[in-house]
Image (tube, rainbow, N blue to C red; front, side, top):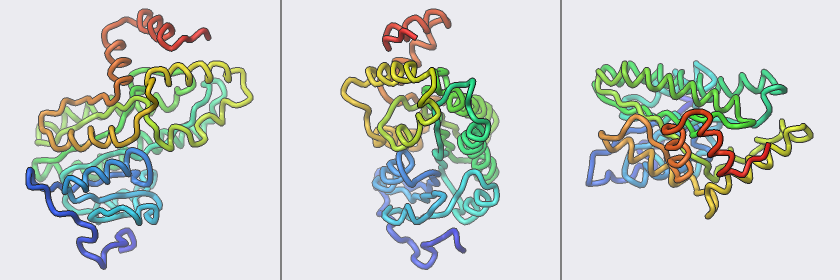
Length: 286
């Protein structure tokens, strides 16, 4: 099977199970960098059987995990093949995602469709593929990666925010449907972290436009929420694996001091109050 480069090496890299709990079989999408790679490392460290996936499986060669598979979340056939190859799963982390910042008035539709296809429809495809098996076995955990921006629309992040807002609503619906059968949904809401996606080409649609000043103000202001610098992805990875292991995890899990501050303020204020406090906190004059 071409999706299974380790098929001739059974158990390659499989760590000994952690004595504190039974090893779980966990499939993670988007493991080439960032949150996905860090989560694969953390879950394997704890003794779980990690099925790490990426569009280019060769980017996973250095990951010491149970199995590595090709999975492109934008390709339905790739999703179906990878889930079938993975076999019985105890948990899935829908992490694969992309981002491009840009103003709503000049955002290219093809870029918007690419972001929605990866972030939302990718989550949709993988969830649809794994849900029947989890329902039939009466257990499972589906972790869907949202963001603070899934609850708070940010300037120049409209399409990304929309993709994450869609994940929020979709996951909450799935929570009510699948929870009856013993399947847990978890929505992880990271704040600003130091990952490749946070910098790689994400501002190219703003350069040379009238929105450059807003971009500078927002970037500087959001960085001020983490005065010690943006944390690394390992913080999010720990939260994800904790959520998988803990049956009492709530539906939504904010990660990062900035996430907890912003989401707490959003929940306790009306729109006008929230905008005023954010403008003040971030020193926005735009």
